[in-house]
Amino acid sequence: MRSALRWLLAFVVLLGTVSTAGAATAAVPHDTAGTGATTAAGAATGTDIKDRILAIPGMSLIQEKPYPGYRFFVLNYTQPVDHHRPWAGTFQQRLTVLHKDTSRPTVFYTSGYGVSTNPSRREPTQIVDGNQVSMEYRYFTPSRPQPADWSKLDIWQAASDQHRIFAALKRIYDRKWLATGISKGGMTATYYERFYPRDMDGVVAYVAPNDVVNDEDSAYDRFFETVGTKECRDRLNALQREALVRRTPLQAKYRAWADANGATFRTVGTLDKAYEAVVLDFVWGFWQYHLESECADVPDAKTASDQAVYDTIDAYSGWSAYTDQGLEGYTPYYYQAATELGAPTIELPHLKGLTRYGYLPPSSFVPREVPLPRFKPWVMRDVDTWVRHNAQRMIFVYGANDPWGAERFRVGAGSRDSYVYAAPGANHGATVSALVPAERDRATARILAWADVAPAAVQSSPELARPLAPFDARLDKREAKEGELRLRP
Image (cartoon, rainbow, N blue to C red; front, side, top):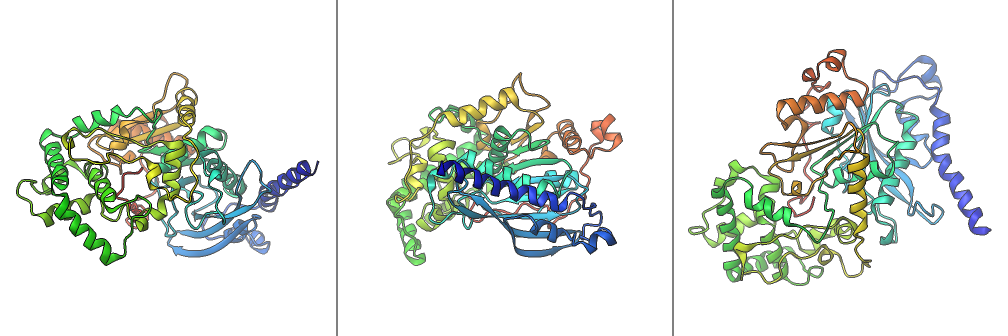
């Protein structure tokens, strides 16, 4: 009985987080100027957009930053640690709101990692000329419960975080909503749609891996056997091989660097393991973040000095990647890869006889004090099956030369108004604008239609579809994650 009463009380409190905000804002007129000053009557009752957002129970302001034509807020929102047991503790989850106008559609973005606290705009936000809500994924600092119960880090809990934020803000931003994300963020947008398919009016998932069967990774092997030209593949493979042939002198440089920078290797185990892991990332890192046209910049393995080989591996893989300091901020990702998401393992025939450890599993990059349950193979199978049979209004965009696209989402006979596109020659930064013209126009037209802002001309002629907001070099430039040159989505 006590347990039931606690659950009921917690449910009422959490429901109030949404319903109280809704009651406070339901009759407020739209902010057409993007400044919060709607009407004289509205201003008299405190309808500035910041006041309306902060009237949501559990919402608090960290900072407001100015940007021309927008209001930008960095916020905290109180979330349950466990959405199954909402009375059993809470934590503060960081999010941002790029406010343009409550009469415009809203794009819900997540990177699947931390959240940038600088104003930025994802491609769908530019296309629909809308607002943007960006969420920090649970357990990425500072959005981590203290103490951290790692068993509550899974894709359903994260989707439920997103659902509660949407429900809290929907009463203010009551027009259409689209979910989007890049890489792990694209995965996150897809998982959110799987668990809460009634929330969003459309999904645009960029370069989202789909590791359905964790132990079967031959698609990656086929990718590395065929991507680009043979000349480029041979050049990259030779440099990677040379880094293992010269392991002794290059490791001396690595050790000197580690000592000078206070880098340690407790999580991965030894400097030797970290060294090999970085070298094995080299070819993958090249194709993930670079273009085939840059292949000529890679030194010839036969004539390159030790320093040139060392510096090249550093440029494309990053010697700091598997230090304790480099891994620390990404523990939540490796935990999820080890428990639900899976991770690729590829064959490396050109390195036969030179590797000591091969591709290390993601559990190797999780600190020993973090308990790891058994891998759950059914989780990704469930999502894949759902997408194939139930996807509605979803677009998946991949780069044809991006390794992560080797295992991708596909739509099946049961899907509706859903599409999978690949941008020719593109890497992990593939966009709708990089698609071939016919696919670019079709995808842009569908995004505009889902957001209910497609001009009349576009409704009858999709080839006329273009983003509604002009490109902004500061706002629309993708902000690279710190230390993102790693073998992770």
